[in-house]
Image 1 (cartoon, rainbow, N blue to C red):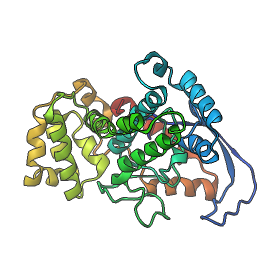
Image 2: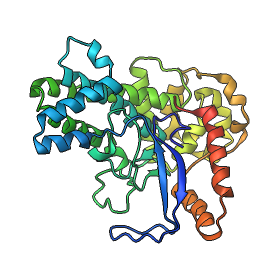
Image 3: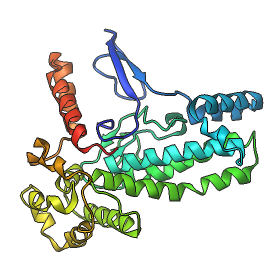
Length: 331
């Protein structure tokens, strides 16, 4: 689903069942044990740098930084005007801000968003018990053990910044604190930029590049937080903006769009043009609702596999998600 929505993510290459009975003491055991082979551009995590800081291994950290820049951030070498560790942090911060904004637009909730589950290439991986939002709720959590809401949906930008600060801590072995702090201070602006562009992309709209973009994002989230309209349903109904007004008025959430609370959103949408009006003629938009991947759907798919070795629901869902991505991917 993340890939279909245009989120930069690792991919599952293959899955091998082992036939073993797996017992875990810290969480429920799966009913069938397997080994997943994952494809990603890098496995260098923020925690990889933290470990060397904890060990005080300055030379090793310098080699890790040099390797990371050479293979994953060569643009740092070209920017000679900036301190090298700070330049590397700036590249990783940019990627992380873009990734987090993509999660927010997709309604994705990472289950365990710690420093060991973020990498220098800015890819999604190691989600833990992830979820997609049923309805917009900043306090929605994915992990059954996250009782305090540490990794709640609305806290993800804060968590990402905290993780970046821990990467900066490690880099203090190699450079001064002021240069790194200056980079961290830019996170808010960079996240807001991507937050606006990604959400408008999910709406299928061409950004205006001014304060109206930020206002539309605010209005959409205010409406969604106060209404029962499904998160995916909203973006399905209003993909293309005002061009979809008649279609939204025929859909299952029509009564909520007719409410006065939606008025500010509807008026704001009038200023925007769709990125590709022809896509609205696609058969995907002849449906009454979007393709989704909510937890109850995942559990039903897994039940068919675990109980009957029936992979047909899984294969149908993958095909449906890929078809959706061809039409409405965030990009």
